[in-house]
Structures are given as structure tokens and as C-alpha cells.
Amino acid sequence: PLALHVTTPEAPVVQRYLRRMVEAGLTHCILETTSHSLAQHRVAAIDFDVAVVTNITHEHLDYHGDYAGYLAAKMRLFQALNAGEWPQPSPNADKRQVVKTAVLNRDDGSYEALAKLPAARRLTYSLRQPADVWADGLAFAADATRFALHLGTDQAAPVVSPLVGDFNVYNMLAAAGAALALGVDVATVAAGLAQVQSLTGRMQRIDAGQPFMVVVDFAHTPNALAKAIEAARRMTPGRVITVFGSAGKRDVAKRYLMAEAAAQAADLTILTAEDPRTESLDEILAMMAEGCVRQGGVEGESFWRVPDRGRAIYQACELARPGDLVLVCGKGHEQSMCFGTIEYPWDDVQATTAALQALLAGQPMPDLGLPTFRET
Image (cartoon, rainbow, N blue to C red; front, side, top):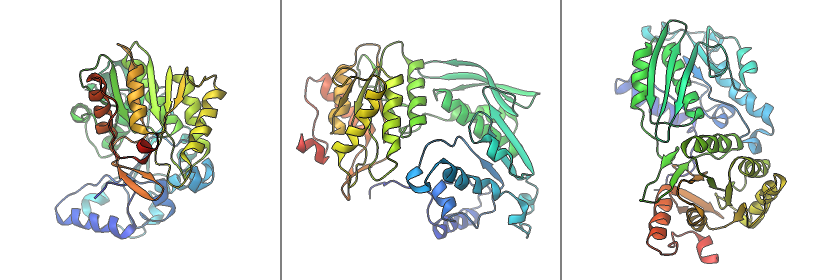
């Protein structure tokens, strides 16, 4: 079956998996908790011990209405840490020893609102201001990030990670904060971070022997795209060429904002399909093109509209020169793309590899099964 666009499962499914974990002898569970799941009470019966926020930016506004609604949904996770939510203590003695902790990003716009919520303990992390968990001595390379991880004022350890970009350092600090909340020492945290390999579809390098770099990433929001381009800048002295789209039946404003972010930060941009669903792909691309133009983009010179995603990736690679970096964003690990009401098998990593292999062999982009290939 296709791995479709998933979120936190419905409450009965979540509880079933948690029960299986307990029966298997597991003692800890890390649960990604989306704004939809919080708004729809899918995790309302879970006694959380540690709540961690990475960032809360422009996303899912088609569902929540505006940023305030999105933030309010996210706040429910931290409100659930309040002891008043669980008047009956857990029968698990080890669980009763855990101090319920909120782990907050001091550098994110959500901090002030989340910090006002009551919590038995609050841990902060930051790259820019005083915090409980912080990093200094950052050094970025094309294939690694180095920094000193600090927990409090008296614990520090060096970290060498294959994950690149400031945003990944923030993710590592968030993970370190969660570990600190559970009493893990800094040396163990640093060793664990060093073992985390590049994740599928997350700043994943694709190498087919081409004289330029190619990276596939899941960035599908204005903030995430800007951060991915920023990370790409650190990885190469050459130009950054972006390929991305914006989903149909989702937040319309995001289309303009993502295009504006790319026009500001990247050298060249290819606008293409990303799950148009039942909307007109041409209309989506027209909105994105308008966003590029707002920031001084010139169609045919600094940005192009290429409806077929495979051909868009191929064209970006054609444009690349030695030392450049092609950044393919929006799909990442996902395994399908929706046109109309049909999910077509799609994998950005496989598609990018196919594009590179065809280009290096002097062949055109092959048909990977999307309806846009046959229409163009």
C-alpha cells in the first residue's frame, strides 16, 4: 500500500499502539503530536510527561483559520502537563517520579505564549540567548555539523553530527532538552546525537556522480523552505537552485509566501506540482509565480513553471553547474502524489536519482507515471 499523507492517528489507534508497547516491555514512547490531533482530541487520554516544541510557524492555517488558532491547538499539548488534567496518580511508580516538563524554544515566536502556561518544570533551549540547553562553537560543512552541547552551566560535550543546517541544531537541542528532562547526562546525549544518521527525505544528499550537489528535503512551509535554502548556502560556494510546489486544497497564502522566500534566498527556482488534488495546477503555479515576481523574479531567467515534477527536477539539474546545489523540496519521505482524487506512486529520492542518471547518460527525463508527464 502507498504511504499516504499521514498525521497522528485517531485516538483508538494511538491507544492500541501504546498498549502493544506496554505489553512488549517498552518504558518510553516518543509521540509526534500534530495540531490536528490536539484540536480533534486524538491524544486527550494520554498522560504526557514531557512536551517539546520545535517551532510554530505558518502552517495548517486552512484548518485552524489563523496563526492564533494554530498556536491555541499546539498549546493544548502543554496544558496537558498540568496536574489538574490527571487527578488520579499513575499506578506506575517510575512514572510518578518524573517531573512533568515543558521543553521550549526560546528563539521561536511561540515562546512567550507557551512560557505563560503552568508547568512543574520548564526547560529552554536556544542558539541566541541564555537557556538551559544551548550550543556554541558551531561549524558547518557539506556533510557534518560540529558544536559544543551545553546542559545547564556545568555540563558540556562535543557533538559531531551528519545532520546539516541551523534547523537541525535546533532539533538536536530540543531532543537534548527532552533527554535532560528524563535525567540523561550530557555525554550520553552527545553520543546519541552523533549516531543519528541522515533521515530519508530530510536534507538527504543524492549522488549519481554529477559535478554538483543535489539534496532532497521535506520543507513544505515558508519557514522550512527558507531554513533549507539557508542550510544549502552553507553546503556549497555555488548557486542554490530550488524545486518545489505548494499543495492544493490547503492554505492558499502559503503559495505566495513560499515563492517569495525562494525568490529572496535562492538563485534559481523551478515551480512544480506538489499534490494539487482537485485544484487547477496551472492556477497554483500562477499564484506562486506571482510570489516570485513580487520579489523581483523574472520568469524564464530566475524562475520557471514546470508542471511535471520529474521534468522540473531534470531541468534544475540541467541548469546546475559544477559547485552548485539543487534543492528538491516539499515531498521528502512521502511515497505518493495526489492529482484529482487519485494517489500516484511518487518518491522524490527515486525521481531525483532517475533524473540525474538520465541527464548523465544524455537521455531525456523518463516517464515516472504522473499525469502531468503525458500532458506536457
